[in-house]
Length: 220
Image (cartoon, rainbow, N blue to C red):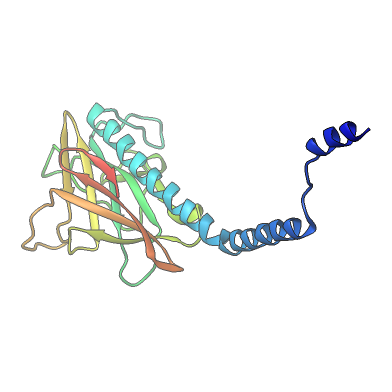
């Protein structure tokens, strides 16, 4: 009988105490509170990353489109033969919150059959598919970064003192970054430019997409 009791005692394992259970619950509650309180910021930063990667992806798609020499069509379904390249145009309005950028078709003009290699269309964007035989640069797509999250916006341009930039791709492998003034001014085209996306509610949160005249697109 004594030997049996000793055998049972040797296999006995103590359970979890009430204090240990309470401590675990408190720890879980603290972490849950932190996560819930910080969840809106986490969502905004995730949206910022998504919008940044989309901009980089749009640049690469536009580059493929421009360097391939493909053409698009007008409202009548006719091929627009005057397209000499494609690009992305960003205008950061100093007097308002900027949330959009456009993909445009670079059309040849009267003075230059090779295209201007920058966006020289109207400020009130005209879509290529909305007109017949467009005579100036027209828009293929307009991307609003705030659709990802209303807190997102295009914060600034880096490596230029201008409010806008045209990043133009034309066949066979020409990349032009134009930040020149609308009127004639003493300013040379940039070899690299950064487009910074940010959050309205957090001035420290920002991501930058860089592109250079070699066609390299990178995220910082």
